[in-house]
Image 1 (tube, rainbow over the protein chains, first blue to last red):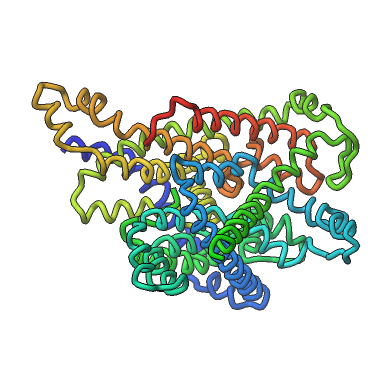
Image 2 (cartoon, rainbow over the protein chains, first blue to last red):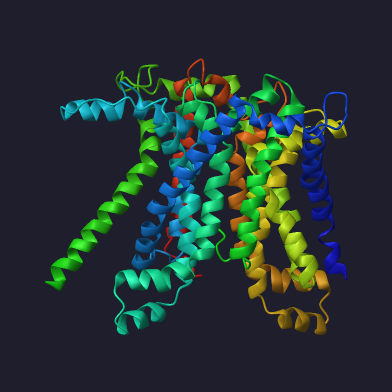
Length: 270
Length: 263
């Protein structure tokens, strides 16, 4: 009995600072300035400007998630094979960059991508045509992949490490080639990690306003930028909350995915 | 034939690993180089200088933001570790149903978008009548840090043997004494990694701080964001380089010290 009391502070904390705040967003999102019930804030997602921002966000975060998955899976397989999992070396490599501030790391890509930047410098030294890289949707995708790749690698790596070598050897002994082993052993066993990785990349990518601000210039607006501006500049909190409710549909969908495919938290990143 | 194929595969794998490492660390290397460049331009090398390192220590704004960042990171990680560890112990001894419900709530701050967490906390602080400032940043950071602690401690708790704790009690230990003598040493690695993770997340956070900070207070993140349009002072690169190298050295010492016990 006394043990249960230990969760008291935590439960009070979560009620006050997680559950009530979320209820407040719902309240603000469904009311207008006078406090009367309205759906106008949520429906405003269908206006041309907001719908365009949402579509662009969905598209760019989809591409980023796909790129992260395609980069991370082979990486996790190689890391597993090398057995570098002894100790926490892999976590170390991927968490370490976080000690250099997130904004500075993203700003550093400006330096690398700019018209006179490092990458174009290398291209012109090789007598190749320079590219305009900064302030494009591509630059935003790059920023997303760069910032969120660790959240794809770690969960996949963690589930791959739990696969027994004997299972894979058995498949090879029975004559399965690489692709058959992948399709029938590696992939099904790593689904919890893949799902966890996908949500951990897709949600922050969908809702970011910083990366699009720093790498996309001022012309490309994502849904995160729209909401941020409603709270800091436009100061229509009701509209901002209403648009956040639309975003929460996607967040809830990913939580449901996690609940379905990663019940035991096998694919958690840390 | 097989040998050449294997070595070719190995070369490809090494090449791939190298590319990913370059991708992850190129921006960091860029910032380090810029911190020594005697030019305010981000694209031009102006010769080697240490002057940004000097200016950094003289800038009250930067030192103030650094202090706020470190105090908030340390305090929020510490409080989150205490609350989170206590909660993990309680959750671990719960029946399946309440356990599932509470773990579901625990997952909210981790899976929710930072922008939604930030906005919702800001609305709550205003509704509760708490003025935005140092306090609110601290509360917000504790809120998003607790789940990292719980998720680090839970697996260690599951591995502990309940009988040892009960044996200690049978031999006359009080529950508190038995906990600190028997259970705590077993879960300590989880507690420490939870603390470290919480500290790192707090240090690297921008979005939630942005919405909960109010006017007149800055952490390093929000200070950098406010400087983006005017142009970042290279002394900021100098500070980040110092932080990064310090952490790198500390982690290398603790991770690869020869007397390290295998876990």
